[in-house]
Length: 474
Ligand code: NAD
Image (tube, rainbow, N blue to C red; front, side, top):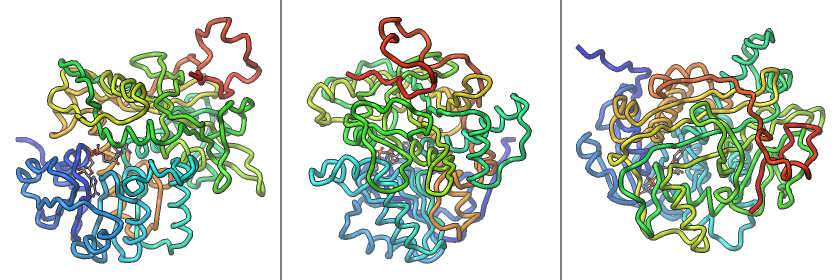
């Protein structure tokens, strides 16, 4: 007989899922499996009919009513009150406004990205800094300073941003063990920063290679991907390339800009991340060029591990995403950029049509005694299908993170506004690991400087091999 799924927590409140695209549809069965709550307490409000058949099959109330700046308070208040849960898996809905409202009403909250209202990325009155993930995160931090640390709101807990923050902690402890660096498990932000610094880690890549393919070629005029097309377009093309900026860096990028407010943990480049190639490495694929697409975790991880002496930051790692999207998404990006960055009218998220491939998603920590260490999830499409319905390998890595974050929030309902780096990594790893395929840790002597042509290298200063010089400018 099949073993029943473990219920990690009992939740007596109501749950409203806002947005029911690839991630919403994928997480629903995981919620039903692992959180003890009546189905009738769950409802979905979304922007279009996608996912309606899944909601019907799972007997969950489903309504199309896009949230706007005008109507969102009324819609939330009609569905939720103190102690209930809002799970925001939409695009085009302001995370800041939703969190602020949930804080006022005592409603638990989780999202996977900081989103503005529709049009927020294309607003010509906003600067690149305002549109950046740094700028959006600063708004969440400002809200956190304005609110009392009461009802829990988890900001950005999918795969990345999300569970990769927990991978960083696992990787640091493994490197400490393998290099004979005796340490207890750090208990504070300061202790984690000191551990990273003492191990010599200077650079963290979120290194992801998505090799999922479908037999049919990409259609001309259609943006295809393994997760939100709108989400990828926003972060890859509308927002600027961004990264957490390490204290060891000697060469400032020619089109690099510093933000004039906030933590100072990150910088941005005046071009999109989808058009910015960076060298990186994963165990399955070895060395490859990824895209330095902006992500919240590039800034939050850099900030979390920062060490300060008075007002001066004395240690901070360089952190950035290096994303090799699936083949059709790469073609879609090229088509879009070639069309002066105007998004294709049609879109498709690959699901049942995927015939093979893996999402290899992990963190690559560089600069320590053993060179570089990658730690993360190698999840094939076949494994993903065996583990859970309605999603591909990319989606399952994200939805496992959503599930883990929700359970943590239900277990800690009075933690205020938190980011992944501040949550209990051990508890969340326990919940998500069964859904991540093969968890792999691998050392490599690869560096971003490996196998560069002599001509290319001759102009660079390599006194510090970890300098941030692995960008290739178009
Ligand atoms: P999707 O494009 O498949 O679905 C988006 C959903 O939002 C749709 O159901 C749409 O109807 C709904 N929506 C749009 N406007 C709305 C509105 N005004 N009110 C209510 N609902 C609205 O996206 P997805 O792949 O499911 O991703 C959902 C979110 O998660 C996106 O913001 C995406 O960027 C984010 N994401 C995060 C991670 C991560 O690892 N952190 C990974 C993948 C996706």
